Image (cartoon, rainbow, N blue to C red; front, side, top):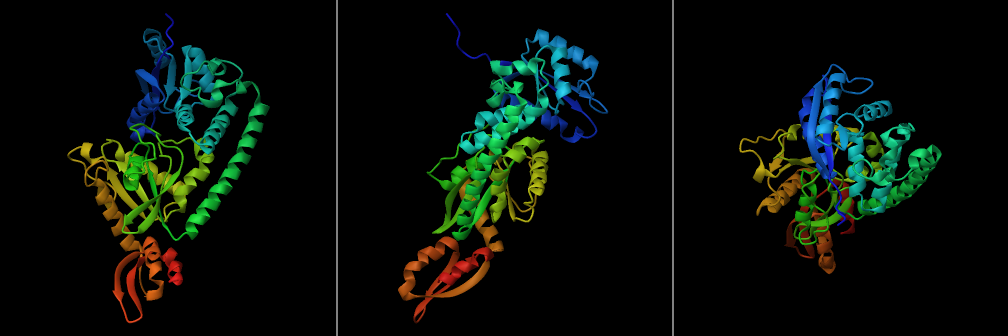
Length: 414
């Protein structure tokens, strides 16, 4: 009988600890194992080495390389994944020395993105990132050029023989750029329509697998369209939905791709328009996985990327999620934070209350009169503003409430 079941790839992980990366080294190696699992690999062994600087030829020392060669043979290893970014020459040298496929953390992440991309835009973004990564690595020799057989590091363009034609790759990148610019223009038109709609905009941001999609689904309620799973990069495509916080008051909620340490520059460039969704909101909800022992490093990674994306001027509500499985001695490290489990009975209500409290800080008070003959406009007003009181006057309703300063123009309609 022929066994058609795909064999799980056996993986050996490797990393070099230096003075530059020692603080986050342990957490990044744990994360590398999770990334490998997400890509469908089985981690068999792990090798790390402390060095003043990585070896220019093979990243890791010759003695450790010999140990790895022995472990590869004993453990029947298919693939070696380095936690560090390998130069094209290092990649070739390692594959020649170890006799198996060698990829780095960057290519592993690109591989997972290729698996996760669902929309046409997402697929184009990932392909462009992969091609930009591949182009300088066309060395014309070694195991790199025989990856058409599949496995980790060969999703998307890696499964074709594009490696043999640099000109084709450059042309393809140019075509993808043009296609993405059209998509970006469409996305910008949608953003402008949203900004003119008079709806307050909230964006979810955070480290991958912090629970952003779970929060979005919980706030949406029954209309659970956003994919959620306990895995890295479960969501790639930006998704925006309407959420009713109280009475008729409605906000738009946007979920985008999660962040990770050393997010490849190729991905940041390719996903520029998607990441910019976070820059066009009025409030950011920074979601943190309280159960993760490395949550402080994750927080700093997100804060650094927020700075790079110029999001630091947007108000932020910090939310520690997964408190139901967090350590009993957990202490938050970010100020003005909320602690909850979005899966718990009270989680959604606590989050809605915290958002409303934040809006009370950000909104400005208003008083208007609404003539009785225009009473039909009241529900429309409630969608854009937090109406606190409606009192019947002699000829009109006396209305008091709060509204976002950038949406105060909506009051002119009433």
